Image (cartoon, rainbow, N blue to C red; front, side):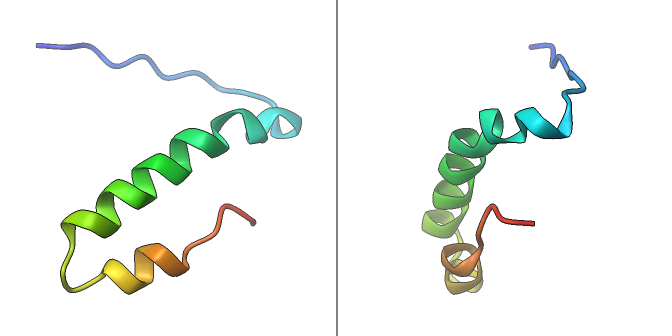
Length: 46
């Protein structure tokens, strides 16, 4: 079984995970027939 490592980062460095979030969001949009539009409409801004 693969292990998962979690790290806490400062808010100022949140943009470091933006590419990963965007790739995951795109992946879910392709897999979901019912919620594809919701995933495509999602943004990283908070």
